[in-house]
Length: 64
Image 1 (cartoon, rainbow, N blue to C red):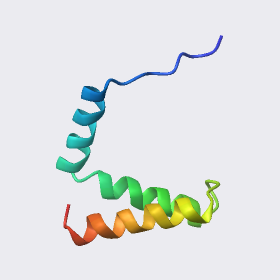
Image 2 (image 1 turned 90 degrees about the horizontal axis):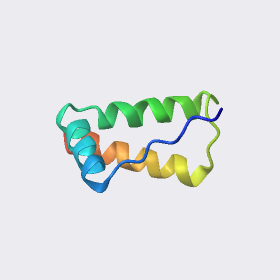
Image 3 (image 1 turned 60 degrees about the vertical axis):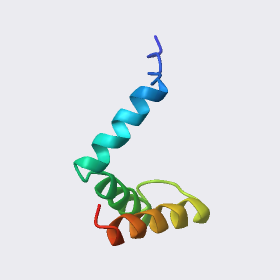
Image 4 (image 1 turned 90 degrees about the vertical axis):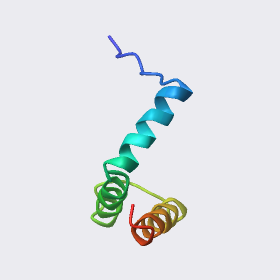
């Protein structure tokens, strides 16, 4: 039996993002994503890695 995928409304997505930024978890998630890619724990193409790295730098520099 396959587990049904959870679907979030736009309102749910917005709330989740607000909380991630407010609690300063967004940059932590990006940092973990980068570490996983760099340690070969996750497959990723070069474009995805660069996008994550740039976003991480932007958040860190914005002190979010």
